[in-house]
Image 1: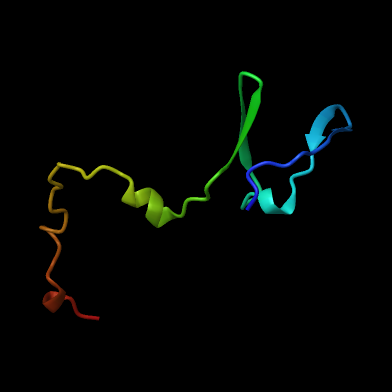
Image 2: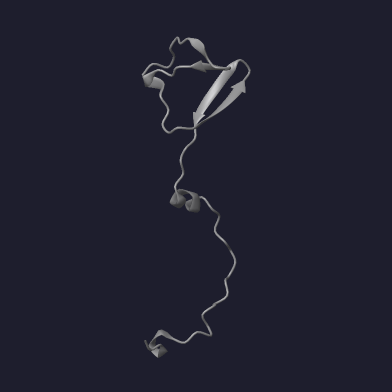
Length: 79
């Protein structure tokens, strides 16, 4: 894959725009744009699923109370 390519800038209403060539397409439909000096950096926003978010959380060191102490056992429940 090429690492650079000459492209043209154009106007889209009041915004300046650029067409991204197919070989540089980003996944998803959102990105972060930031400026560093004369460079524009475009980074795709990674969609994170719930399991990935939960996997990144720190483990809790707390002991939770046993909330079913006062409930009858399953053997004692009649339907």
